[in-house]
Image (cartoon, helix red, strand yellow):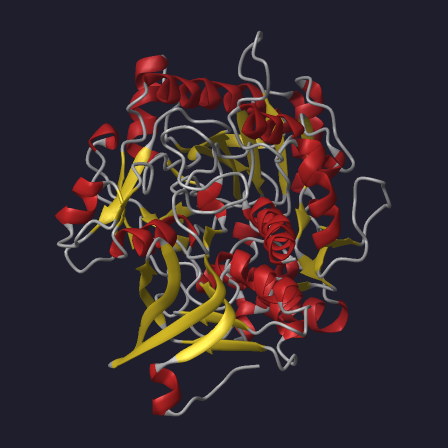
Length: 540
């Protein structure tokens, strides 16, 4: 339950577990840890509630992303490898975090993704280790399969009312050798498929709705919103309290057992750095006295860079059906049967593929969108009126890395050079040519009537490289800045404990050693599910 506390109580509060961040992972932890009525759990969130109607409608992401009321809009430094362009990363500024504003794509990583984690020192995080936690978290309402869960808090479902253009996409994929996979979350993901979504009966099912909302009636769980975590207090090598501010008021939350940082890929390293935990030079640079040197904090930042190609077509797309009559029809479809475009995610079909022979695993993810749009750097989306569509590709495992430090005001400072590794640029060039090959398949060639973006197809790799540098974007899948492992760059060990400190863990997407091949939200929930078991196991 939410709590309105008196000023005296706000100044000093105590619980067994204090969770810093009410995003995707924090909501899962709050639910699972508070299942034990013998412990007190406190969840602190800097944003607000997630009850807005626009946050419940699946298509509401168009009004949420880029809106500072709901979105942190993390601004990066200019990237010289993309001609000095600036990227903005969206991050949910409300309970549920990014699961409350994202496109609701529900997809796990590939088995090889997690086996790679294990091989890199994240022992206990191979595919067979994490599969039970994927099953535990989900309530899959599609065709039953032993790999799927059917009793978890998070509802997942086949996409409702996919646009007819999706069948053309899937047909074209088959024509170039990518098979259609009925359920990609059963372990085999190389091919093409209709998107599965984190929705419940046509409504968004975020971590807030699936995990946190049912748990808020428990008397041992307190949820405090609007409280921005400043730093962690460390005494004799043990994390003892969190210091936060709510408006002008300073608040101290002490933990009898553990503090769990779940601020996300940008927020978590920033909290550690503000606490004097991290590379000594980065801590001093922010005017903070180093307290615990840990070189990996803020490093290993990874994101899926993307490039899209848009085509004009001679059949209707969602672009050509956005008038007042269409809006009334969509509202009726949603109100009468929870169907129509208002239940849709922007990416309605996807796939994993290889740009060339000889690769050990797929190197690109395909995203099919039955409309065309112009994406502004701050995340706002504008659509033309003409019928058009697009296919965007992201690199599954980019080699370039970024870093998080602190700005002068001690907020996260994001630095990422997307094409520091020339192989990443070449992969996106190859990806663009792969998309063109897909568009040339008979299924698409029957409906495509011209280029939209780029306005003219480049003639060679140099032309494609120029297009990639000028137009490539991000998939909003940042991970890795508090890496899990056993090497010198690791921030947390395989039990997610901050190395060298007691009673402190990090649990969110920042602990991923390597970004998964596809969208990261489901994997973040799995991490929190497994973390809850680790935490409870240590308390026994």
